[in-house]
Every structure is written in structure tokens, then in C-alpha cells.
Length: 149
Image (cartoon, rainbow, N blue to C red):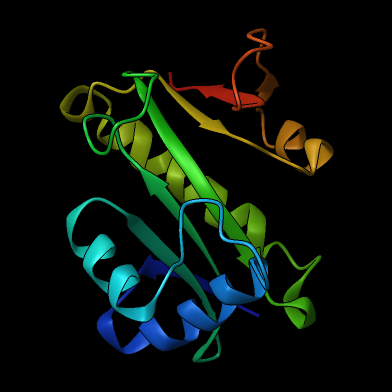
């Protein structure tokens, strides 16, 4: 089973939106996400990568790089949503998606002025196994960080 991680394409939009919607069945923390808003955001400031297995999208991750959107930590890449379809969980899909963001952070560290990747992780063990550490700032909504070296 080969996992291919790639940037989301227009043809993936409906499937990614369906997965995104399943994360927030009744409540979307940043307002109501629509298909059109997701498409526009992905062209301007929201980076979305998908995991593909045998031609089917198995999950996605999104992130915002430094300098986009009004986020408080100016040196950080912000991981927003990470979603893996239930039938593909515990197969390394989520890990591969996060590793892609780490790779992109390293490759673009100077260009993006990024020194860390942050997340508001719910599954602490998952993130910590990938090298993320708890953040000390208890007032921050961001729970874990990964220092880009």
C-alpha cells in the first residue's frame, strides 16, 4: 500500500470538503465553511495536501504558513485540520501527512521565515510520537510545537 502525498487539486475539492464537513457536523469554529470558501481559501492562504492510496483520497491536512492570515505567532506554520477516513486509520496516513508539512517547513524555512510548526492537537500521543512537544504558553490555543531544524 503506497501512500502518495500531494497538493490538493480542484478535482479533489468536493471530497476534501466532505471530509472537512464530517469534522464539524454542527459547529465550524471559524464560521461556516462552504465549498466555495474552501476553494477560494486554498488558492489564497490555506495550504491543503491530500493522502492518496490506490487512486482514492484517504485523508487531508491543511496549514497556514507565516505571513498569511492574522495569526499571532509570526514564525509559525499553523496546522489546522488533519483528517483520515476511518477505513484508512492506523496505516500511517496521518503520519505521512504531518511529515509532509515538516518537510515543506524545512525546505521553505528561510523563504517562509518559519522556525516551528504548531497545532492545537487533540491526540497528544500521536503528535508527540512525531516529535512535537507541548507548548509552555498555557494561554495559547496551540498545544504542541515542532521546531524546524
